[in-house]
Each structure stands twice: as structure tokens, then as C-alpha cells.
Image 1 (cartoon, rainbow, N blue to C red):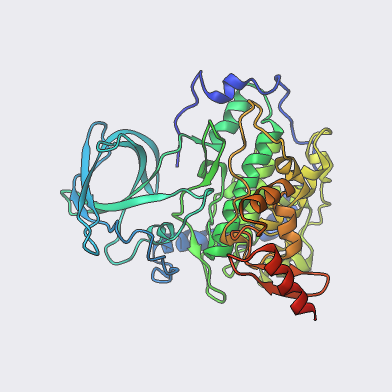
Image 2: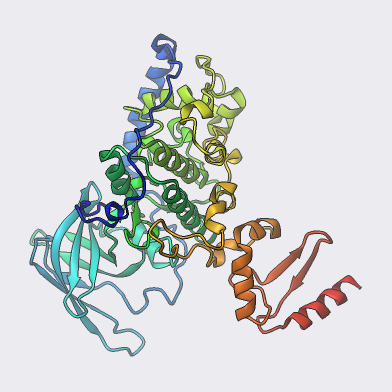
Length: 485
């Protein structure tokens, strides 16, 4: 989803966060010899043609296999068909919501204001609700009458502070009997892409506090869709990361490519925008995991640190070359992990470019370490989204007095919900700052927050203690003594 342009009075400009600093440049890197890649280019080009054919089939990729939606999300907001087309400024679109379970129907009207994004998916326009005055974003896509819309089904089940929220939806028709799905979402005016472009335009680097804040929230959102929803976004990039310019809260958006991955089920490999495409996708893998989102997020982190894309490939073949220039030639085992069909191929031997030379000398070692953990050839070696959130690079955000550069409070970062289910006690301990734990205890009579976990793992004794939400510290102590007896 595109954003509105940055204006002269944008809050980021008013804050005057840093003095202008030279734009960092990548250090010279060893260039693989083109003739050594010729033996692979024909094969990869053929694969690219096959991937383009797969892309045409994407709309029909297991359309019926979607996660069950929660009954409380969207039941009163069933889509209705309304007349009207085109988000022309001033056009008014009226629809109804409700009408189920004895509830009265309610008419809602939207006035289109401006187009904020276009693409092969359709169009996104800003609109105002005439009844409430609320500004919303409406994504309008052509709907195939034979299939359910996967994006709609996925968004209906999502509820997280770092994921764009769906308000409701409706269908609209045209004089040519075309059917369009309109997704009505909360409106957030900026994207991480636009913010980064702003700093680049004035020859500044993005302040490190914002790099930490944005990427931390990206991983929080990914932890939710991966762990709770079982969904892979498949198009993580700065353009799909909305940011509130006042609070600096970040939300994942555009779930048009997202899918609930099923073990053993093939998926298309021609997915993700090129700069952020995981190497296993370039190798044609079809049984990939949510780790492709982790690679994409690692590319976003590196781009925010550098001020420019880390792997700016001009084609599928060139994208692999750009990755090899930094990570070096993948080993046979790494190739096997990405796609077993490529293990017999011999790639030119290129040494890895040291990460400390990729970034400028003053780059914090924690930033370099996290980037290296995210950008691994082997998908299984990449850290998970929750593990990324717990990385020391984000420790500054966990400090009791952490604030935005303008003195305002940070957006909510530690109100974890279901995404911590199954996480180890050690990981939870890293994720929840002590001052947050103390605050929660003082507000819950000594109980651990219910949103963290209802079980406490006693790692030193391997004991799991079930806690009742209304239990007291004394009751929990008694339960502990009984379990250890």
C-alpha cells in the first residue's frame, strides 16, 4: 500500500533528529566472473520462465485451504454487493453491515478522496466515512467469482497491534458485470519506504533508534502471523510496512500474497519482491517455510542501516549474484537445504564479504550480528521472529526510560498475546523487560500477566505449573511446594 508524500511539515523533519551525515556506501566487493555463471544462467532463465507461468496460476493456488476464521471477527460485517465503480474523487459508495443474529443493518457511506496506491493487484484509495468522519483506506481488487479471496479470509482472523486491521468489506459491480472486492482498512499515512526515502533525500542516515523500533515491530508482527496464524506473508518489504508518523507504530500490510503454509504442500516459488526474495525461492523451492519472511525482514534491516538495498539484483540471475557477492558461494549442504535438485551444480567459488566491511565502521556490532543471523543460506539456521525480538540489538527499547527522540513514549512493544505460546521461559524472560513485569505484577496481585503465558516453566527442575487466572502468589507457592514434594 502506498502512502501520502512527505510534506515540508512532516513530524520527522520537525524533530531534527540528527545532523546530516554522509550516505554510507557498500565497500568494494569481489565480483564473480560472468563467464563462470554462464553454465547456470540458461538453467535459471528457464526456471524464471517457469516461475512466470506459476505466477499466473497464483490466484488459483489452493484457494480453498485457508485457516478457519474466528467467529467474533467479521460475523456482523458480511460483504454486500453495492452499485458503483472507480475511486474517483468525490464519488460516494454506500454499503451495509450487520443484519445477522437479529442485529439491525447499518448503512455506511464512503467518499473517495484520492488514490494512494496502484498495482497489478488493483488500487488503494483514501476515503472518508460520511457517518463518522473517519479516514480509511479501501483496497479494491477484481474478484474471481469462482474462488474465495484468500486475503479477505486471512485478514478477518487477524488482530494484532503490528498488523493492519480490517474494518469490513463489500463487493461492488460495474456496467461490464465485473465484481470487485473492497477491503476497508484503517488508514495509516506513511510507509517505512517513504520515511527511508526522506532521510536519503537529505543525505542523512535513519536514526538508529528508528531502525530498532521499526524492525522490532516488524518481527513482532511476523511472530504473530507465523506462530498464531500459521501464515507466511511472502512480500515483506519497506513499501508494505506502514508507519504512523506521530507514534511510530509499524504495521504489516498487503496480504495479497500471504498464504497459510501446509507441510508437504507445494507453493509457487515466484513470490516476494526481488530485492527481498530469499535464495531458496531463487533456486525454485516450492516447499519453503515462513523463514522466507525472516530473510526479507533481514534485507529490510540491512537497507535501513545502509540507506540502500543490500541486494539490488536486476533479474533473478543477477539477484543470486548479488547475494553471492556478500555471503559467498553456498556450500553443497546449504544448496541442499534450499533445493536438493541443485546439489550437483558447481557454482563459482566466491569468498564471503565480511559483514563489518559491508557496513560502515561505526555500525554497532549487535546490528551486524543480527543481520548475519537473519541472512543465512540455510532456512533452518535463520533465527525465528521471536528470537529476533529478543536479540541484544533491541535492548535499548527495553530500557525503563526509553523514549522517542522527541520525548514521547514508545508505542506499545511488550503487550504480547498468543505469539508467546510455546516459547521457552528463557526466551520470555528476555522479551519482557523487568520494569514491565513489575508493573504487571502490581496490577495483577502478583500474578504473571495472563497474556504472557498461563504456565511457568521451571527450567532448573523441569516442572510445569498450571496457574489459575485468579490465583494469588500464596496459592502459586503452595502449588509449587506440592509439585516438588
